[in-house]
Image (cartoon, rainbow, N blue to C red):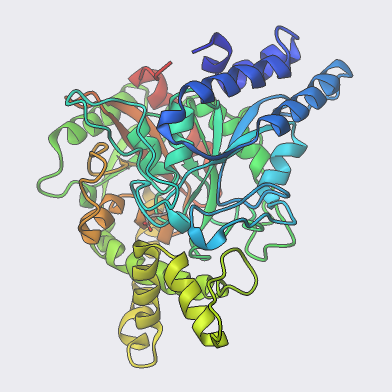
Length: 487
Ligand code: GLN
């Protein structure tokens, strides 16, 4: 790996402004690294010409002292964000050849701020999954190699983004998180990933999965980089009625790592019997670090946590079944139609050929829980439980400023290991979905390695719109844990 591609976003930004290297050199270094790591399958589409063109523009802006906040910094984009004129697939066959005529709000903000697009990263089909194994474009490999030598999954659904950042193909990648898709792959790949408060980022132009849960966020190698990038991504957008009018603070300026006197909650429900011992030990280490740094540790209870996974796997499929109804062969991508087929035949053949098994499963679950006979029993009940889960957090946050938990119940597993049983796959999300259902900000930071040499992450959950506290707790942990990234 070349030295430039191992620099953090902050170091690249500062070095570019100080004219220590050019944006073109930075782009080339990352494009080279991408070439050398083709085997990871982290990208679905690479955009080298665009990257070099944007980098040249950045160099001239820097020369004119007109640099934006991330001028000349390479950015990898999860292939769920619509990018004008650049193939956007959601890792699905059904979006074959779909080239959006518009740009998503979040990516537009990145280019406005000076970001340089490297390409579109691989993901689980329509962001449904926890292993990046449901992509039509094939699985992504985790850049961390376990001692047994078997290729591990990078987590999902933002697996390509996580792998790209971990292997230094990009200093930052955009992810989306519906029930953990930024945090869990960040944990599996030993990087930082934050899902901000629901509403912080505009969802305009992000291929919808479950609209009441979907949020964009950055994936980086340091907490500081995530703070810089989140500021770029957030802000009110009139095109998304759920985007929040709240002012966006300068998260980097507020980043001190000072947690003196802050109250950190440790929820007992996140320590079930049989919790992996290495994860429990790292969690305890994190607790001890925060205590040493002057935080007060408070035992708390969020009693409805137990129902979160079941609730999520009713609400998310319900919303997905509705959102994915638009893919009918008429407006986007793939169309399968034979001589003499009726319109209905065309719909059916297109959807049968275009969607993969997991997406079909979710559409069927969603359609079932929304059907007249089962709506009250499942969907309505799940909405009620969702409210109870949010209430648990609201009450907890009267006692504490932030909550510390593990990010995922295991480290990365081998590719192919959990695909046979969807419920086993869903269990990956047990620690990330409660925060999503409550719309709260959550970050995952790398905490250490397990005995097989694979990363494990810790999660910090915060109050709504209190990302600066989340970042500060994460920064304190990062300083204490001293995790060594690849590269
Ligand atoms: N793994 C979860 C799921 O499969 C979360 C996905 C996501 O956050 N996009 O639904």
